[in-house]
Length: 333
View: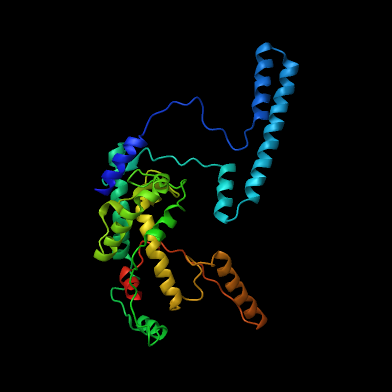
């Protein structure tokens, strides 16, 4: 019902309209000097004044090259994180992600029907993990939590033997998260972008706070917040094989807000009780690939100084995040 009311307000004040534009948005390096040079080049081309045309053609190319160089150099210098740097690199050499035009169905027959292709992807993405669990001979059927329980109990102090519980959402806390939303992020299955939630934060934060707290109290997440927009991204191999694609799921913005609340307090809990291994660098504040590399290189240098030999085994796990055992995660909390 909340979505219905919010969508009704959006349809009234910010309806979706179709607009015709003369041209696409110009790139970051485009400026008035380039526009003028192009205009002069086309002018002399139409007049058949080839000497002047050749001058402005070379002049246009020179200005564009210089503008691109300055623009991209500035973008690289202003990149504060590796993620921003990779965005710049992709702009230099963009790769077009084509949608699969045909796919092998369950009968091994190629189909170009859009509905059939979606069904093939949907079945593969929803069953591949379970199939991997049943076929993986290394997957343990029973779990021994004795060592895990012993490790956790050692971390607990006598005055703090409590399980983790999600604290209630506060209006101010939710508002602060909403105004920090990145409006450039993708839209989920609800077709409502982050910009609308960010702009309307002062007016909807009270109702959303109540809804989020009801979700926490009842331990029930509405299905509308679990529906994701899934995009198949090609990895390698034959493009007509569903197994050669990985799913990129985009959840609604509201589910991300609730996820941030839970994640923040869960991380604080694990950090406060020192339940995270010192060598874990992934998904931790003030940690990154650099801290992991520093630790391993420091260990190697110490071993070499002691005359020991270092051997490294590099592993890649198939569907690593998808096959995480939820039972063990629940035991940890």
